[in-house]
Length: 144
Image (cartoon, rainbow, N blue to C red):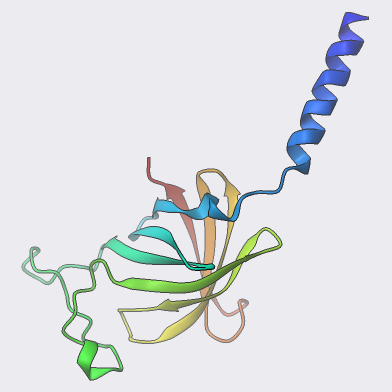
């Protein structure tokens, strides 16, 4: 009898946790992959991210932060790439973050961007040109 009660309790607990919808704000925070570190924040009804660090962030001297020299807008070419908001417009829809834009400081182009939380500390994203099939994926870990 005791085993039956425990089994029913465990089943109800798992069903209750399965029924909970993930919060869109779970993406907020700092994330790191091999080449980048970003901070995701809420911007109105969407999510954006600023660049905190990248492997290619510094000039050859190893100290000076690079400027946004490939920006198509000449007025913005003098700004620092560190702290630059380069992901914008992510919308939480059906458990995924979609319809975002990724501005690349490496080539000055803007790409489509989407992401999905695979766990509380695991984020998979994809930057793409045109359709998600043609793009590059990144796996991120939450920075504690």
